[in-house]
Image 1 (cartoon, rainbow over the protein chains, first blue to last red):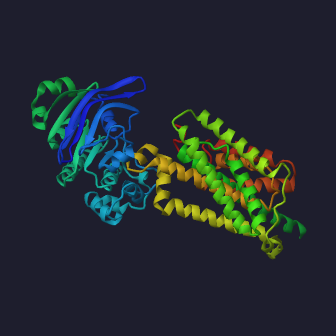
Image 2 (image 1 turned 90 degrees about the horizontal axis):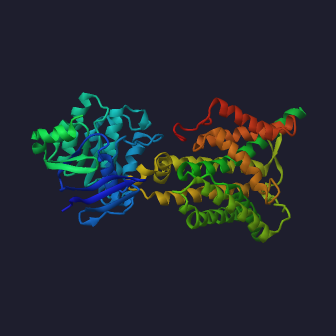
Image 3 (image 1 turned 90 degrees about the vertical axis):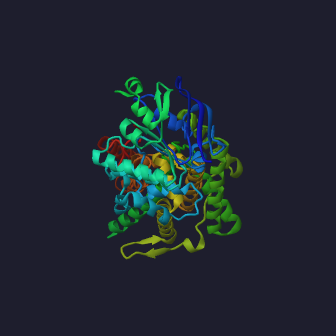
Length: 236
Length: 292
């Protein structure tokens, strides 16, 4: 069973203590969402799982492997992939090269062409732009590339940070379908979203975070119907 | 037509000097771009290259073996520097890296003098490199034409390496975003090693190639390093294209200015740097956000 389990996670940045004992679980094939207001600690949670915070304690395990204290590249090779908040597309690299970057660090049996074909299935626009410098694309296209780049490593778990941020409503709808489809293909997901309705709509399970503490959890429907939680932790 | 002849020769001399600057500056620029380190030991790595090429080709009688030895020796020293010292400084203050590379530069410069003495050496031209080729308007030494050809091939190779190979793509990606490169499964520490060794090897080759043109002296590195920094600044930190354009400009300025009004070369080089910085503070091809 490839379940991702975070237990009693504390994260610090310089002097500030940002996460206070966060615990959460992503079962295999599940789509789990982490919601909360700006600055609640959502991005920090994803970065901590990926090994990108300067100081954490607690335990992070994936498929019975202890990830705590591993380098980001080692965590990536265990099957986790981060689609970061600001996409972090490499400037100066073409779309094709950005996709290659998702694959290079992994000893993959599958060829670039085969994998990129799957990515292009989800995002046909990328193929037209293969040889274009990636950062000259629109925000929406860059978001697709960021997800596609992560898919190139054939991950078991995607950690996705604010994928709909700054996208046109029509693109948001499209992205929602694509995220669902990626999940249906057997990739579990930990989704961080400001768009609470969308997140709860496509998720199996949800955690609500506020000031670095998990304040509530439950099936997406439970959280959706709980007006008190929505009022207290999610309303802007 | 004496003037045209002389001018042609000078332009070619400027081209050679410029290409040597490009080799040095592209190493400096790669190392800065990826590791974030300004390598003040770069000029003295070059000196080690010059001395080892001179010693090895004298001992074996083969110039090419000398160049090969210089490249391998300097690359190996680069590996030693990165693994034994530099790797511990990446997350610390840049002042530490400044002091460390400055100290290494002193050690290398003193080291070659301890091994080979303080006297300048004469690096004999290889037999095939003596004589000149008639280029219609003027004739030009064979060895110098060889240096132009070899550096152009090396730069083409470097361009293809950075643009057509997986390691090259990773190096370019890491120079833009180290954290994301690591998060995608790339061992960035290994990329740092490759880049530092590659930069050192380029300095080693440059040192070997310039040996028979200049006299072999311990201060050769410092003499070439300062204009090379200017090249990097004019071209823009972290840009290979910038290093090439900058190198060719500085080479021509230095040589042609001494042809027309001797003694002003250095002044003009720094003046041109000032002009470029006034018009384009990041240099000709410096990337946005490098210092944000």
